[in-house]
Image (tube, helix red, strand yellow):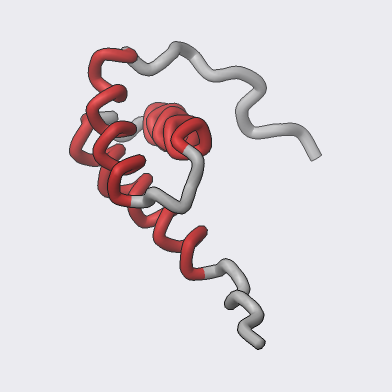
Length: 80
């Protein structure tokens, strides 16, 4: 089956995404900041790929949902 997207048309403007990544990294302190930044960049690329307007507010909202799912899917710690 062929891939839907073989490349991303452009890169997200860093000045727009840095504040979003910083806010989400502060909110999700259990997730490494690099992973949060990658999530934000991936959401931006997916939004553009789908032809939706990629705004910082939209990207932050969707990335927050992804990060919440990541945190909530972690197995509970084993307390003895």
